[in-house]
Length: 166
Image (cartoon, rainbow, N blue to C red; front, side):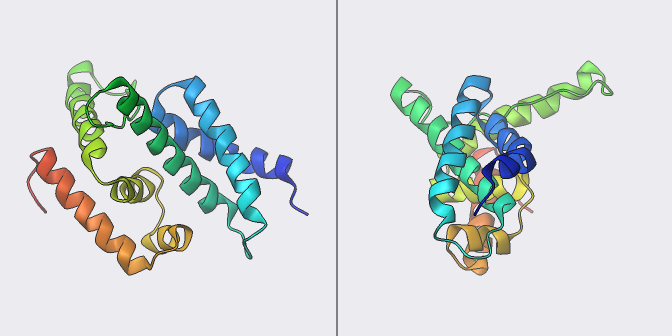
């Protein structure tokens, strides 16, 4: 039997961080947090060899992206742009923090213009640090497919943000 209190204690902070980073709103992050664990409880009976850490971060990221896109769609805003929370560092001077804040704003808009799966894979890889193998396993796709979609997302983000290509 699964001890959900222990799982929430152990993995709750990473789920919260994943949701809040994309939603930027504690109330919405709390809803996403709740939805993530409810969905995980339903899905856990169908999975063997559960890696709750990866599964929960994937669920939270997907829920947060969908929730954010839904919010913007209902508001008729910029095609569902995804917000990322920028937390300035106390160690940097104000002038050194302007450029990262501007880049975060550009990334917010550009992520909202990507296909949902590409945005999700990008966030899972670069915001949550999952490997393409972990992403593929959780999303039910081959790791090579995850890698291809990740590269497509990066290339498209560079175009949308008018950054030099690698």
